[in-house]
Figure (spheres, one colour):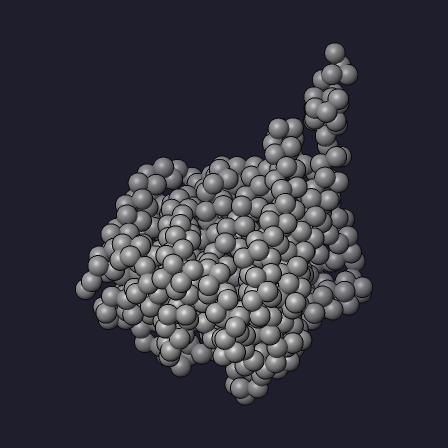
Length: 527
Length: 52
């Protein structure tokens, strides 16, 4: 037991208390699953950022950057943020108009097809459970490494916390705790970066040292260190672009992001929340990158790359800030877990069980079962876990994205085409992933499993839709999506949405200028 | 030089995505809103105005 453990326990207690307080305000199914469809922008931004950031990016990405994977990984990470902006405009608004409780419900209604809905439900629940297991493993590993408490005990503590928050208060509590957690980890990280930079000798001193040291140069160069992300520098860039497109697709339609649009108080909030979210994630990813560089300057010999951020938090910054940062990273994991768990509950109650029983009760039972299963897998680590984890990755990109985008944009996509596309995307993504996992073969970045799945999805949709007909009811449902509800036609709100959307371009310019000033130009000069 | 190109690609990508989103949004909202001397009004407001 140490001060980090005490800090983590206090934060976990606070989250549970918030969950309890919010649970008193939950009066209806809408309150429980979509926060009453009246969440303000700040909660949507907080939840979008919290859902993106988990232990994976703080621990995993920092380790990859430390080893020299900046070129592909950073490119992928920043391209992902653009998915928020695209997703809100090309999908999120229509999802909100549908008044569906879940995305499987949306896609089922769009095509008047139970089969399409069921397929979407299966992929949603399976993928969320896999992500839940993955996040829980990350949280357990983090807590064990920092506190010395046994891995199993850490798993149990984390499960109790996120299960309590989610089952008690539903999405309302999840949004509030997500926002608090996002504020904590973003603030702690950005402040920590400055302290780490100071300890390492300064931002530009670090850039100069890395640029002028042959053994370190590739850490921040476009070439990267071959073998970290992909076999060669060019392949790493291609990997970054391909995976950037894949994860951008996930950000566009992934349930843990797009479900937030259903919770927003209006469409203007949907649009406007994505701009600060995208910029927030850019700051987080950039801060993680530079933290890894500063740690490299002070301790270039960390054997386990997953320890990079933890080491930096415990040795390079004041203790209280280290406590906040590590507590923040824990929060990132818990916030992601609450989101995945609430989506499992929503899908099981709304899409599987339906209206036969009380939806809140069914959702709570489903969440308890999902948490229990995740706990068992994390503690006992059975061989089946290997197969189950293959459902993770970017199956949402390959199975959902092309179909969901086409469900909005295409007049010619039929229900059979939608089903074929989703199935083909899933099968190809899963199949290629299974092949590489079992054989250990490293495929070209152009043969990324999720990218191939997306192509298979598109091909199947086009071919099958060619031989089938769009029904009148499908046509009518699609046309109805484009009718803006009267309640959304408030000129003030519309103007706000347009202003934020325009500001998105300015944010792109700011990102470009920051990258040039704080990295690319000085690095080129020092080299 | 490669780093500058990479930075420009990343920034340029964000600008491009924001642009196509903004274009889509303005095209759709223009169907529903009418700009009258700089102030936007909705279909309902326009109908009210013409009735008066």
